[in-house]
Length: 317
Image 1 (spheres, rainbow, N blue to C red):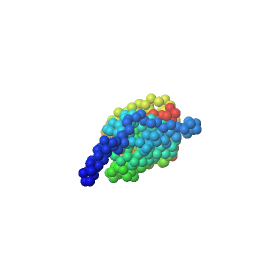
Image 2 (tube, rainbow, N blue to C red):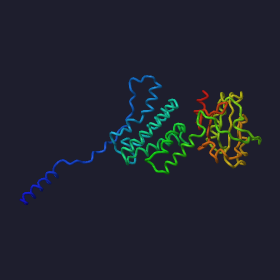
Image 3 (tube, one colour):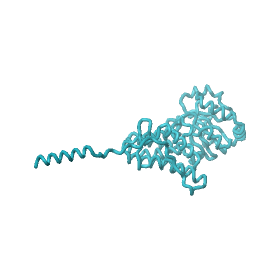
């Protein structure tokens, strides 16, 4: 009897070993980026753009499937292709209303967190966050936008999936993005002009003020100066008093700044920060030079840390 039981057990084991096994489901292969498909019933161009911005990442971050990932692949999409999609996303958000852009950035973070929670160990959150930071916040990015990056950084400051140190970094970035936002009054400050006279930003009277934080040794600043001086429309606006350009040096080597005074346009108001509060106290978040702010007559911020192209476009030049 015992022998029969042993034989039966052996046969069962043999049958199990020869039969089909349950193995871990294979990871799906690489793929093209799954673009969002705008519903046919949405026909107004502005509504279509807003919908696409909000749902741009929905299919890519869906939690019903996990695709292949490695050092150059993120959820099935090659990293270089994913970066192209971030560039497209940035361009898209430049064309929608501010509140719609805000919603799109919040939705992006929400879906990233949900995906990373569903697939612990996936590389989507760190890789996509890095790309978003590079495009929206890097001072050298031509499409940077602190206003759009703000809700993203605010969400990351409370993200349970990253380290406390990273949360602190994103909280600091969110704080800096919140300084002198478009639609708010710009922070006032004192400055001394080339003749040694003291002024305040709010003491400058003009329909619009172009506030420039620059440095005479900055190559990009010289390029900006050449572009501004080369515009006949801008020169006419300055001559009429409609626009005033206020160029402020915010570093501490005042003697070096004074050596370059003859190089500044006489039609500009050129000065330096005698209190060193702009950079030291972070009155403004000046991360790269030149940094441009377009202000209204009451010093409401119209453009923050703008490119020269954005400035000219705002004036219709």
